[in-house]
Image (cartoon, rainbow, N blue to C red):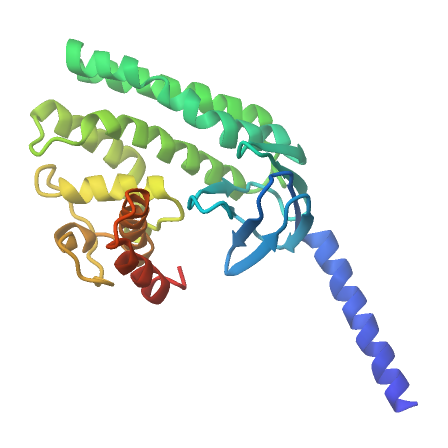
Length: 300
């Protein structure tokens, strides 16, 4: 009798837990229509998805998925997820690495994942003309801000808040993701030279002070663009006269003078970038970076 009671109680608890997860968790289904296997990574989890297979993830808060393609080319895609806790979304992964979405906020995810980069980066030519030819600092600021406003309006039109009466943290994440991509597009034309002129310093500082400075003490790198922005600032820290927090060096390299201003999650991307490049040119030096990533950044 006691055994039966305990067994029934265990089943009941399991069912209640399952129902709780179904009701209060995001449901993200990945359909692998690619010809190769995929490795799906989220938080500290990793699952394998064979070709033509699909799986559903139940979790309370998945912010990013990384899709790795098992094709021997070291190809991967980062997919930001902007779902409320009770929403569901299906991702179809195609042979050409295309991602299509169906479900809650499918149009929003399609905009951010498949169109955002093009929308923001197609303006680089116009930025370059204003910056290099006209040398008009204020015009570049005004025009670039207009580009951002117009794009954020597109996002607002597609975003639905979980609770309109409360602070919308989901929208804040979307906004920050878009702003980082936008800043990176501007820093592409502002950085790269060894010595900055007065105009360039003014522009870098404008975007830093308005959009980055408030978060600099808690800066974190969930994706490469965040690393690109902060590593650019670290390289010019003395020229633009800003103060950045210092962090322990995880693995000493010739880049320590800059990496000391990057938290561990950002230092990781220094090694990822070098590993990917050395892998591309098939250099044996890639093994060092692979080992460092495996041994010293496995928890990131």
